[in-house]
Length: 271
Image (tube, rainbow, N blue to C red; front, side):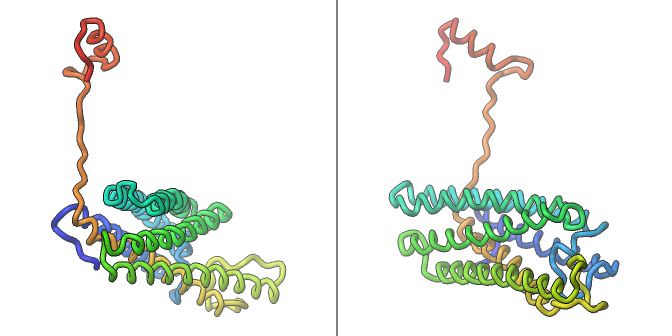
């Protein structure tokens, strides 16, 4: 399922998985080394909340977001080229998934550039957009893959993507639910105090066990995000991406608009 081939664009999903893994590992190691977070399953956002780990977190997550956008676009074009409007349901579902992924892309940029220690509301909203819309995209693309069987793809990839999409949705719901329950439990026993950021075992914090469940689910969700896009690797080995440049002038000091007017006056056909 997941290997980098020597053909096409199969290396792009692999590169994204490497960047995401490196980002999470680096920020976690630096945050724990600086004693900024508890080493036992902190939230991913907590790892990248303080400097210097926030600098690495923002830099590499921005790069991962751009690469994710490219991969999503290539997947959309691949399905469109194979389908060629033959299946209207497949066409609409593929297009709708791209729209949803754009919201996830904006959310990912928000998470990367607005740490929870800076503007908490923006960060939490962006995280919800990123993970929630990513789950919706995975469900839609799993449905697209199932609908493409057996004409365009095999059965095994249908099972793989359906399982990852299911795991993503369960992890997302679990993370949000137990995170909310942890906050409610804390404020019930410690009214008037702010929700711990980050949570820690070093002090008494009611709801900490619930927080751990939420954090584990968030890490599983991040892994599912990387795994689903990584599943495109074998598909992308069979495509060719062309980027061409066509100059509109023969001299770079010339104006293409002026040249077009001159050609029209002289009767030279404009191609």
